[in-house]
Image 1 (cartoon, rainbow, N blue to C red):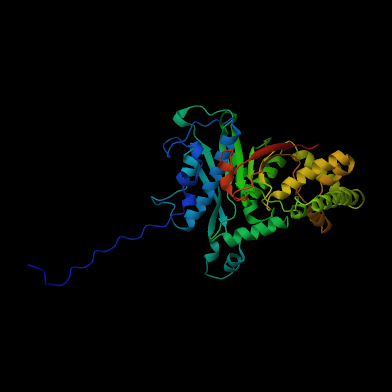
Image 2 (image 1 turned 90 degrees about the vertical axis):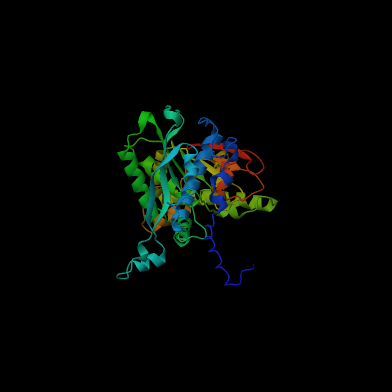
Length: 395
């Protein structure tokens, strides 16, 4: 007999699952060549191999991006958290996060409004990871004891405005006094002074884009602290260095000629200013170059990336000028127009804008996103055609 009563209530649908970004999932976008057949296990790490060191540090930096992303989504303590896989897969544990208050104009205004605390929002810009060798085995001599990693600019995120503000300060070479940079230097200094590094272990620093600038600033600061006597291995992925030379299209013959003319004229001009009008500034920068020269950070750059291409041009032009005009090059190398402008306005630079020495790793691939962090945890292939060259000061 057919049921003629009221229809039973429809079952309550299950709540929708939270949408997860696939690029935050280590097992989807992580380094497949570093994983075994099981996506939850990784191959044995060879710390003497550049590829393994590069892949692992890039993944740790990616983990800091995911940490901040999950914080904004209130997903840190959920079962769906994706961040830990980016470091636990390589036997690291998160020692602490680096966070500070947002410095965007909206938050600065909010701090001056009574009883309104939205300006006190804190965000994660980095983390310190500790390496824990598997099975209680001793640490490999080439492995780090700790890695300090910094993320770059977030996209489609609450911290984007503050990140872009810092990017502008980097462009103007006015970032050293920014709150995030100062906070990072202070925290890293405190960590190094308070931590007994076991068995002569190493502390590494790493960062991508904006985070590479923070790591670079921190590395300069550590080298300036003579009492620490440290030469910190540093991995800088797509570090920002915008220059006029990057605007020239090297594929055009006339552009190459124009670039050589502009570079030579620039070196002569800086040499003249430093010799005649800014002798004290020139001497100060020379001393600082000498102090920083033993530090050789690893710079991972791409010629198609306008943001970091300036480092390629700077070191190539410097080498070319040293071959043609060694005296002029030695003087002009230590000086930058940004530092010279600050000097003219009575602002003494504690550290030079330029780098004396570096190991330059260039991705010469013609495919893929040239500013993407993902390229640096890939093996050699279509998206990663890696070459390297060491630049030292004095040349």
